[in-house]
Image (cartoon, helix red, strand yellow):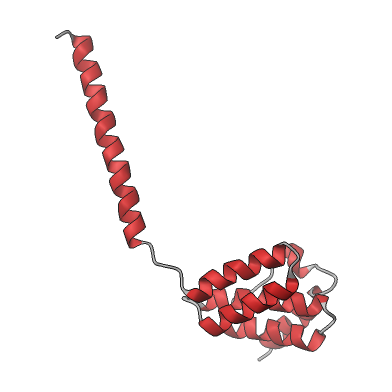
Length: 136
């Protein structure tokens, strides 16, 4: 065998090893990944419905997600955030206010991003609740 043959053989062996490692790593990741709770799955479904403008379906999925429970209080706050958005857009300011309050209770670090906080419908309600929660 020539040096070129050895290099090609070495390259092929290296590719086989790396490919095997990648597939083993993917399998380990798959086995160790935490399964999503029912609440987490319903939250994803609710957010998708919200983004597609299906607010009635979104509200039901989000409330069902809250009832099912989450692996994290941050996810619960996120569900309340979207319920607040839906309530505000439905001219239900008391419910919007309540949902933002629940989001802050679940996650004291809860915050809307800049675009969300500046929204003309729910932005003022959010800021009012945020200021009330900070003063407590």
